Length: 600
Image 1 (cartoon, rainbow, N blue to C red):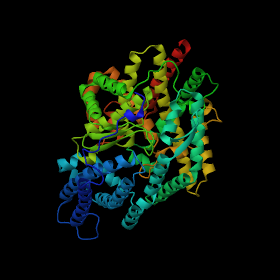
Image 2: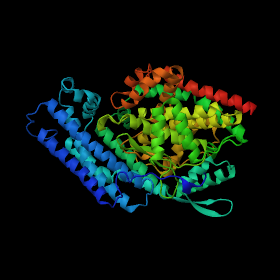
Image 3: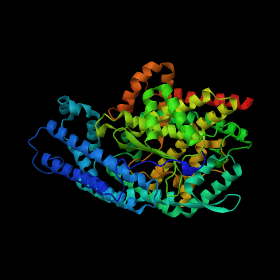
Image 4: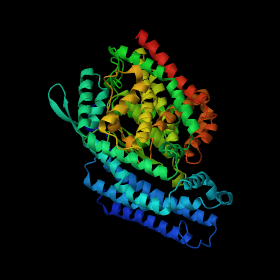
């Protein structure tokens, strides 16, 4: 199956018949009403208001407020995902954009209520309240986070103003980047004439076996970004400037410190991981050099990074990929396999690339235990691997279904746990029955992904760290952004790539830089990759013990910080030894790749 017209689109009718339906309007109204009722409850309980405290005890007030917050969270999650399902697959859908804007305005009030809640939690004896209630005991970690967050709040008036300005500030700039990038049509010389092609399709051509076509697509992509560079640079400058101001006023040393806290780790853990990654850059450059030789070029260009190796890779149709995923997930557990079969059967996947649809892939929660996955599928192992990866996220959500809505969460650092595990299951299954030529291509695809997660993520981290620092002084020009991007790529990829054929516009292409609520939306992917590899290593050594603990780990990622959860599996994530042990698994794959390259 190679025709994208046969690829599935996700089914959202199980929630509402459509954005214009009476059912949707009733759901929207009920969600807004829930936020208004939450505000009335907070007023009644005296949470964050200048008035006499409620006669209820802190324990009773906490139980009531958490119950109401859980109800609102459940409603908002489903409504947000429903509207987003239209915006992300067709950014030209004016009605969906209107509904998203309307919801964003309503969520300002919810953000302000969370600030009131955190400020109040910071003022009470949480430990005593938690000790006296099983409900609060289950939410103990959430309450600890709120108490710490209270130390980093501006005044009530300033926090209210920041929340009210957000829809027309950072969120609007982020939406601009998403809308602009998803609607770019790129003139491409296909060899038989010029065709206007969506940016998502252009970027998929980076995986085409024809090097000349990859080169033309790469050049056309850079020219397209250059035509849109001014509004995208304005968006990036505005978001980073806003973050600098707000995090400083909230008494964070930097946006990175705020991000580390929000990702439930500490700087010691982050530094140990990043330093370990730097020590293994030569290993990844060795892999890039081997790939260049196999492709018959002196040194890889940017447009060669995702190039498939010729002669060995099987073409995976969507039907083949889904069947294989279900079958191989069953080798781990019937529960995982049955879950994947349900996702395919009930059309949880939107796999078709098309104009207006955003690039890349993601998974979003819809309802308890139910998710939606977006991919831009092409008939390749890499696309199948991506599909398995996103289903891992959905399986993570599935395991949290029995938890209260506020605890069906995971920091970015742990959000990749199930996705990496599922992706690795698929890789190992393909390798097991493949001949040497196919093993070479599968290992290359895996190393390609790991190189992105370790080396490219490191370049993104360096770039973002430097742009935050530079943005304290003034806006940065397009040329400065391009130069900073190329410098970060040089320090990480080094001699592994042709210095004249890198990508100066990755700051425009990657939506991660434009996340208002998630600054440094990069290093958690590296954390997740290496953490997931560590878990898979345990699974291979102690499969029965692992199976007995794994689903509980996924269910509990909203209950404790990353170090505490890792300790349950015997990991010390503050130690370089842990990160190096995972990176050694990658080095072993590079060695194996080198051996195969020499004999194939």
